[in-house]
Length: 467
Ligand code: ARG
Image 1 (tube, protein in one colour):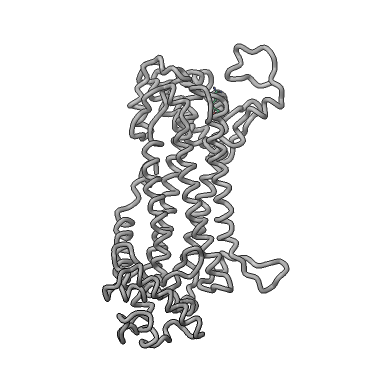
Image 2 (cartoon, rainbow, N blue to C red):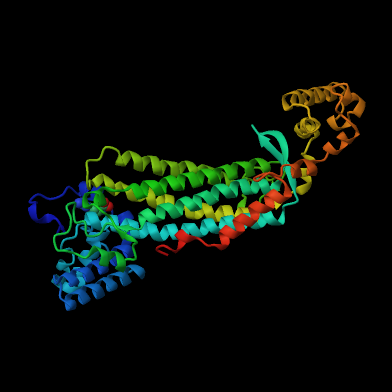
């Protein structure tokens, strides 16, 4: 039977089922590196209080380095009593350097330790995700710049609405990701606060220099209240919300691309690298990458909702329920890392069928332009809307295209129609008339591209924290 870290007050044995139920090592071993880093900083801080001699601190720090080496090389052997990553590392440290290892945990609790580990770990993952997001935005902006001349139907209610630039559609997604990047930078600042030195809940009794700890571990500051420090998993919830919203954005891109790559639309074709075939139907090329992005958005929302349920109603400070924060966090980080890279891969390799997009522009999509033509002649918009509708109906009744209506036929609907109405039947012109800021004109889309290029060049500020 293994010796428990907290075994002093216990006489009975732990039920083996309980032992397994209680253990977090199978998943929290991912935290081995940050757990070692936190402990090394803590050993230094203890030495500054005089509780460790500098020789003892050095022995502990070197011993921890040796433990880290075992993890890094896959040589770390866990034992049955290793409840979590903290216990496992301390047990191994004791084996390597002897009883001086027992001084490391002075004034520290696994409660401030795990809160620290989680922040250290997440901070680094956020920096990586931020770079993937940056990469995705970069790929999309480049495409938008290169393909700015292509027009496509824009949809509302998935019904053909008005012509737009393909780049405008692409940038619509990019802006949602740019906001995701901003949100990630904002929450990174809240992750980047150090809880170490809070003890179990009431604070550290040995005048540990928390500012020194923050400096050692490169945190922007220390958390303000020890009870809050060990209770707080807001940073996990916030990250999971970020992850969920980002996945929802990717899912909406995916849905568009699934539709646009269907045979019926045929606007785009996904590269073979991101498609798969059917085991039964030889002709099939399925957009599995996109379907998985859509599907995994549900999974990440599950991570968020699960954690929020875990947090709800917990009494103040640490409760073991909080051990349930790890698996959803790890799952979301892994899912986002994969999804962001796949989305970038898909976007950089898909081919656009400009011909199919152009052929899908239909004259009815210019009926708003017809109404606007009359507006420019001084007719009130409410009236022009009605008149343009009547023109659509007239063309339908005559079984001809809207653009085939003669000026005389149009004049039966309103005397303001003149020979120049012919200029309305031009998709390019229609798009370029939407020239106010944020519109689909060549100029307005170029403004967006330049703004995003400048933003990309300014760099990823959250990516530098903890990287
Ligand atoms: N494995 C625990 C967790 O992940 C570490 C903290 C344990 N603290 C305690 N008082 N039992 O939350």
